[in-house]
Amino acid sequence: QVQLVESGGGLVQAGGSLRLSCLASGRIFSFNAMGWYRQAPGKQRELVARITSGGNTNYADSVKGRFTISRDNAPNTVYLQMNSLKPEDTGVYYCNAEISVMGPIINNYWGQGTQVTVSS
Image (cartoon, rainbow, N blue to C red):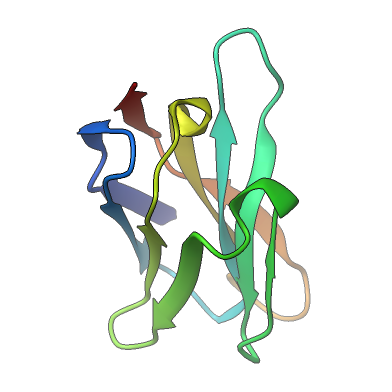
């Protein structure tokens, strides 16, 4: 079993910063990538940022220049530094990991989600 545990959400005023963390644990053979998704009320879940095992990153256009994704391999933790937050960044943020528990098959795992609320 693989578990993803997120932390760091909360309430912040517009222009403020938050840092999200996600720790992956369990039977992990290898990582393909880890990332953060968010879901605002009434909207579909969307990719915010993703980082591959090789360190390549990609971001949603709406967060480029404000958010930074990074990873610490020991332990298996991914971070999302969010600066210059806007009310439209409000939502539940989910950690995602593309992990192999055995061999070449990659599975998707999700955290439980952490609420980020940005007040205007």
